[in-house]
Amino acid sequence: MSDPEGPAYFSDFSAMAESDVARDQAAEVVRAVLAWYAGQVLKERRAPMPSPAHIEELTAAWEAARADQSRLAEASPEEMARLATHYAAQYRKLRDS
Image (cartoon, rainbow, N blue to C red):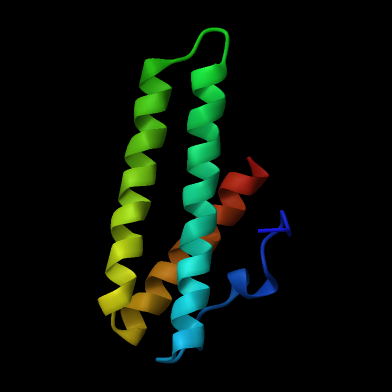
């Protein structure tokens, strides 16, 4: 993703309808969160004194996001919108931390 702020549509999924575009947008926001966690795991592993507990915490969060990403393919429009909204908020929080 070229925009570190994320696409503008990361902020509002309330009107998301059943469509391939909506599903792709939901998948993109989950991928952004996955990429953030993967980067943080790598950063922690490369730290002079890596924290195994922090790596474990980051990895667990990555795995939870990965499970949700897998659910998107079969998610109802409501579930897809819920997941997209959740991950958009999480992405903003992670990016701002």
